[in-house]
Length: 117
Image (cartoon, rainbow, N blue to C red; front, side):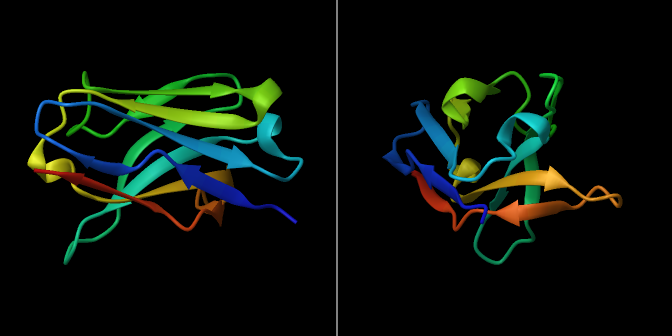
């Protein structure tokens, strides 16, 4: 049973930083691509960043240069370092793992709230 648990969310002032973590309690971590998505109130879920099992990273245009995704396979943990936070970064951040053949992520965490004021 795969379970993804996010942590590290909270409230921060604009310009501040937060670091999110996503721990995988299953057994698939190192072999899967993983990603962060976010959803703001009244908006669709959007891609924040993806990291492949090889460590290749991609970022959404709105976070490039400010956010950094990383993973520690030994700890089965993925991170998202968020710097220079903006009010528009507010939302629920979701961790996702393992893409299907159609490139959709199969497993999702329950989300962690990030509020920038």
